[in-house]
Image 1 (cartoon, rainbow, N blue to C red):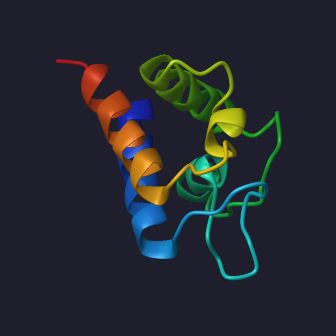
Image 2 (image 1 turned 90 degrees about the horizontal axis):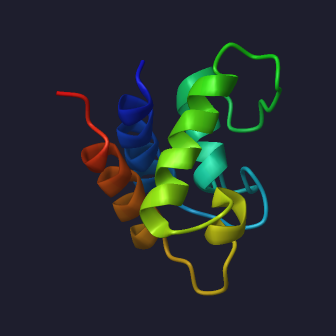
Image 3 (image 1 turned 90 degrees about the vertical axis):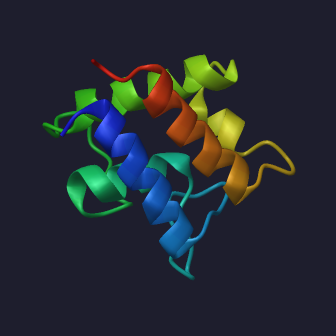
Length: 102
């Protein structure tokens, strides 16, 4: 999977499960931006390890979003007051589109 594919799948995951803030996944199954990427890359929105083979793919995808939205950290951006599901989904799709490999 490419970072672009991961972002598109994570956008769909958020649309299907919902968006939350301040935790990877809440009790209702909603996920934050990083939780969605973890879900599509590892199968578990709470699986967070630096030694996982998907780690670099997640980091690259997060950097693409950070660059697109002008944020230093995707987690801080996700947790900003008023951040909506729609904004996160659009940012993921825009980042994937802006960085597509021909």
